[in-house]
Length: 435
Image (cartoon, rainbow, N blue to C red; front, side, top):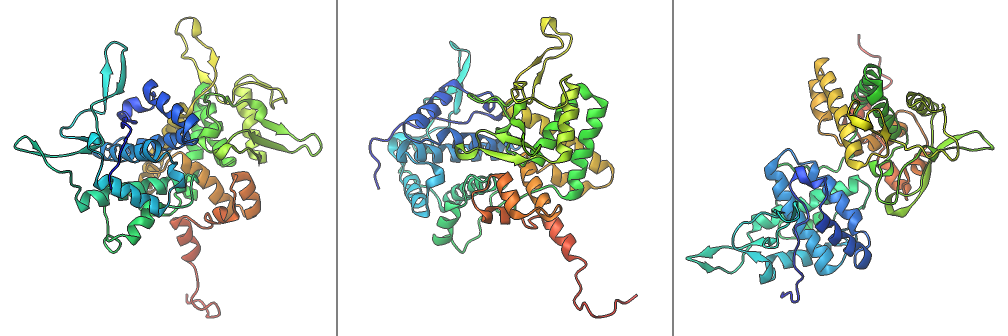
């Protein structure tokens, strides 16, 4: 298969220390795609960054994953002009054929950095010499491009892991990479790639682990209320309303405010309104009494009234200016974005894991450090269904699931909770227990 009129491939993901800062050239490219050819390009790109950043502490894994993800998104966005979410097994087969015989213009014969510093602008920019495919030379002559079976299997395994992440984030409900692998000549062969976990289980905090998260948040809030009352309320809201971090983070065109907490004038019931979420949808989430109390405590720590008025435009999560630094000392400034909120929550989770380890729960602590911020949403849903006994239909509405089948996946999804519910099962319920 020959590909003609192939658009140039642009590196999309810088090194971890630069990725979250954003890059103006990449941002313009993604914005152009979103406006003209692939409407959810920016949405997919944001999730791709989140997935990559989970591997930031393993340099080899990060570089391998970003190279494959860049090649794949180039093919989706620039070649096929299609969303990765809309792909099928047949689409992946087309991608495989593309990778086996890539356009010559996209093959390099030496390694170059994906991003370089533009000294005139003082900003890192995509390297125009980078290519997504690396060929070989012999005695100075370019050899025909060839991809080994091992390399191809690794590429598909990485894509499968990315799709598993998207499924876990409720972005999609299918994994076309897995479907292709099962129907390919590799279908009966196991594929092992360092750092990839092909388990389909929704990853949540156990009841014990979550108790450490909340107790640590309360302890930090008591010790340093100026900073950690915000952390305590953030984790309480994320858990209590099953929120995605993007639903409470500031971004262009959206700034979360206190008046998203609303009281029904007829019933007196409080709820939290999410004006825009996954797929551009909005929803309203029921607020528990404990979460309402947490809101009061948080607002009082900010010297606000106990509960917000319908027109309260106070930022939901404010940026604290460092005290004692010039004219900005003591000021509060809106509004925290995804990276800042994620950093706050990751700091809390790590400190909770440290405390669990000190108390002798080393295995739990190790597992807690592998969980992500999105696990808080999964945990809130799982605990409400399996521990609090809320009806599936109520949880479905609050979680914003399109289908009850999605909500049903959370029934006893944790291995630990499944074990705890099974460990005391009797093989013969009528037999007298032996003392």
